[in-house]
Structures are given as structure tokens and as C-alpha cells.
Length: 492
Ligand code: GLC
Ligand code: CA
Image 1 (cartoon, rainbow, N blue to C red):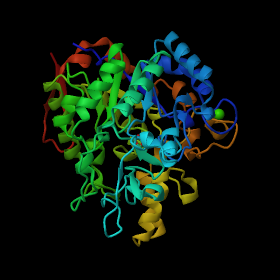
Image 2: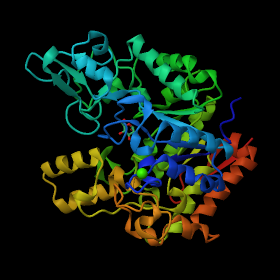
Image 3: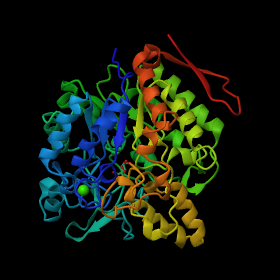
């Protein structure tokens, strides 16, 4: 049986971890400097957010070259040092593979635009409707229609995300081979972990039709060939080594996840799903606020814990990432009980069955940013939705309140290392502002206090390493309907 249950993964957003050369942007030498800190915490893997060459329209999730490190983070040698030095601390590197789409700056797309049919077929194109409208009415994840017109072909290309992120055509075997080659290239550099970005969206149906009930996702999520394509990628690349993989599954179902991450399926080691992070969405809509529904949160955890273990499939356990607001501000109380709620949330999560993830700063109880002016935001989604919400008639103050709760920049602010200028993140003005509370909430202060959130996380990791039942035991829920408690036991 696979034993991923003893692993703990720490996620680093390279832009915001530690700047070593004073340009206000985090980099690999900065991460190398912090390896002893991470070893002290006790983690096994570092997942690095997308760090390939990119115009950065979506902070690296618009990849222009999969074979090169973006120069803002350092050189290929810096990356190789990171892999090498991390191994000395028994830490492995997990890279973020953005394979659903490329940047429109990618050579393939540029060739397609220049008329090269071979590369045109790397992407997804359709004719517009006779009425002059785009091929379907689907709504992009970042707002607006999902199709962009290209005059040369009198056709539109599909972009489920930003207009500069063109969806790849995985039905083309050449595309599938390219993807396996990329994974292979990084495996040869000593990378043993891979996170696959929105990978359950890679297989689109043959006929694309209007969605009159939603934004189109029901047609392209967990698509017709997705399991086959993942197995193909596994067999051609990471399946050949002792790897740990995780797929980011957008709006997925349990039925599909037990397949993606099921024992002997030869697809992935584990999956992220996001249902538990929508319990504070009003009418399932990210940009509409409501208080979070505790019973719904519990029910979701129980359903997924039981559902996955029945098939020997593995879930990622996580509260935070670079796309989510901070959990103490969201499901805890960051004003009156910051430390207590951070510890409580950590415990509830880390004792479940699955692979726990700690997102940088979570281990010291970092909070939401509480920015008060739109000029403080950088994220493309936040900026788009600022306009969309304003156009829908909402007042400035209301829109700012929504962004304070929902913006992805809440989780992307620089890591708070100490009480010095810019929280010790950089000597220069950071690319995204440091949160005002850094003088109280920072690594130096946490390490100096044995009762801190940091040591609580350290203990949770140590417990997982020590007890097989935490790694492998069954999850059994108790007091399912209790209005205030979330209770479960782990047993053999
Ligand atoms: C994933 C990433 C997110 C990115 C999107 C498009 O959801 O986590 O940051 O914007 O995919 O690549
Ligand atoms: Ca830098």
C-alpha cells in the first residue's frame, strides 16, 4: 500500500517568500536561506508555485517556457542548488505544472498565430456563431467570455482563464507527448513531486455548447478523456519514479476523485478539491459573502474523508493556498483569538486522513491583508472583479469589503519574518505590500515563544510521523450533528 500519509507538504509562493537581492520579489536564493527554518518545522516537501518563464499576467500561471526558470527567481543553477540543498534536509521539491493552458506568449501559440497549422492544432479553436457571437456563452474564471477572436483564421481560441492563457488541445497526441517530455526534464533535475494545475479541465467534449444553467463548467470539468490522459502522463513520466503528485481539481466530484487518486489507478497520488472552501459563498458564488456554514463544512469533510478512504484514495488536507484568503480570518477569529483559532483549525485538519499542506505563513497564523484601496491589489482576478462588481452597481466600500474577504492577494502578501522594515522579507519595497500586523505576527516572535502557533504546527507534524494511526488509520466521524463540535476518531 502507498504510504503518503506520513508526508507533510509546505507550499511556497516564491514571489513572496524571501527576497535575497533587493528587487522586492522573492527568489530561490531566498528560499535556500530558509531551508533550516523549514527543516525545523519538519516538513517533507516544498511545493513551489509556478516559477517558469512567464509574462506574469497571472503570476506565473501563464507559462511562456516550461524549460526555463523565470529570471526574477534566479537562474537554473539557483534552482538546481535549491533541489540539491533541500535534499540535504530530507526535503523534496514539488513543481507546479500548468498544463491546461499556456501563455499566448508561448512559442507554440506564437507559431499558431503566425499561421503554422501544426501549432494551431495545439490549441482549441472554433468558428463564431452565425449571429457574430463567440462559439459559446461560457464565462471565464476571471470574468468575461472564454473566447478570443483571431482574424487570420476567422476563428476564436478558448481560454477558460485570462485571455492571455490559451487552453491546450489535449486531444492532440503531440500535446500529450510535449507534456510528458516537460515532466521528464524536471525529473532529471531531481524533482520528485508535481502539482498539476486545474488538471481536471484538460479534456473538453467534442461538441461545445452554450450553457443556459451555469458558466459552462459542467461541460468541461472532469471531461470525457481526462482519466485516460492522466494515466498516459503517469506512464510516460512521473510513474517511472517514486514520485508524489497532486492534481488540482476544480469543481470536481467524489466519484471522479476516487479515480484520479485511487490505489492502482495509475493516475495521481492525491487530489485537491475545493468544496469545503465554498461554505461561505452565497449561492455558490465567490463574490457574494455569507457567514460560513459550520454544519456544511463538517458534512463535506465527513463525506470526502469516508468516500476517499473507501477506495484507498488520497486527499490533500488544506485550509490555505495562494488562491484563498487566510483561514484564521475566515473560519477563525483573527481579532480576539488569533492564536487559539489558528491552533484549533490546524489540529482539526492535520489529524484527518490525507496529506496535509501548510501554506507559507499559516504556521505563524498570518491573517488576511485588509487592504483599503484598490491600488494595493495586484491579482488579475481581483482587479477584474473590482470592475465587474462596480459595474453591477455596488458601492466602493462594499466592493472593498468583498475584496478584503475574497481576494487572492490576502494569501499572497510577503512572508513575515521579523519586526524590521518590510517584515524582513526584502530591503526594497515589496511587489505586494506587507500586512500591517507584521510587528506582532512574524517568524522571529513565533520562534521565541514556545506557546506559539509555529510550535503547534511543529508538534502536529511530529505526531503524524510518530503514529501510524494518523498516517493510515480509518477516519470515523462522531457527533455528526453537534452544532459546535467537529469530532472524529482515527482507528485501525
Ligand atoms: C489554478 C492556480 C491559480 C491560477 C489558475 C489558472 O487555480 O492555483 O493561481 O490562476 O489555476 O492557471
Ligand atoms: Ca529578488
